[in-house]
Length: 606
Image (cartoon, rainbow, N blue to C red; front, side):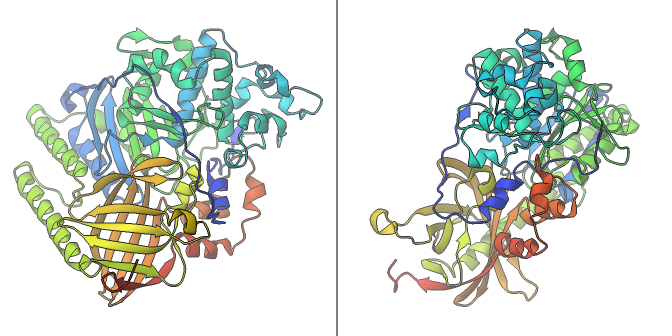
């Protein structure tokens, strides 16, 4: 069986498109999580490049390429070889304190759980899915659904019509999956669909009598020293399986090590090697012109001996069984599938023979020191476009700090125009929450009609007021307060639907093509890897407001329209309904341009 060139499903596109209807009344429900109990992070031991037979200069070049290429939109990068860590680095304001959403990367972890269950004789690949849910096996059960097996779920060949939109429209995802028929005969075609992996999680919940996290904790997470994780649950309290896992780069590396070692870690075999080898074996063959060459049990094959755990927007783990090299990354780019600039850079690094040839002793040690400097600069958010030698590093850091401080002072001076004033939108409301966030968590758009400002010594405090509605007379207007740092991000929590999310907020100065002053407000949802950017263009008492979000919804839907990506489950059903004019709607919705008026609070009542 071969995967067509347009192969990877856009896991949440259906939900996001649905949210373009702007259901103002939808405030969202709280997302619940499972976290491992009595399980702590045990960091990997660090080693230098010459100890790992790696070339520091080539590794430094990789970091520069990924950090400087805007198409990569890199948030974090980690490299290890064997079971030793070379480095783990997050670009500010990201850090290991806020485990990043892995998107579809966690599908592979769910498949690992299935292999543990097989090793304990709790199920087999040939078992029929309905055998675990006999209550849905009746005269009304669709004929193709009766044929579904564990193997079909593992290999994305169920051909089920039930896709991720069910997570918005239904509170019983198992029922929805088993009462809908399949598009084609199970096993006849590859159709990427996250509900396949959710069903694996639901089956594991049935056969083990415990949650997926609780099942994996003594078998995988605790032996690997992975503690700082949490997995989002469906309305029935089952892990989502195919998405929703928050995990650090360290944890991602350890999963890669486990797979590269055929289920062994620190000299201990955690599962039979044959089962992990079976999981990694190619089941679906890919045409040679595509980047991915095949698919195993929820795991991608890349050129050479490389394999990948892949999540949309740049959440990847790539490993080599031969060299034992593992690279993990977080990003917020616009790509839903493996064939991206980010992945191509990493593949070239991992396949380059010189990567595994350190320079002479003294030269390699100097290059390693330089590598550590570049890693530190990346973590501090400094520009890596210009190089420096070892002796220039402190001068370089001082210059970068001075640049950031000068920008901070400039934006604070510009923000005086807002101090003590309220910005009233006079054309249309603006949405504080990005559409991507709405698609993932359905919190409602939080339509903003007013923003008040108060300038502090090193920051700007803002209060976003929700658009008025009939309920306000009884409850008062809903509001969200944010504090934006001028020289550094301010980290805080804000309510998003029924949850509280960690965000980092900063203001920076810019100018437009006509040299008008522009204040850029950057709001980063730290665990979700989603950015909301708001530009305020200053024209005296009039202010133009322009919104953007990253990953860019327009680029994502464009890939669907042009056929560069496939919507999970019901590709043709949705793609055929997206008219050419939808691009105009996206432009208007995702990046609206709004005019507003500044009102002085000393003369105007709130």
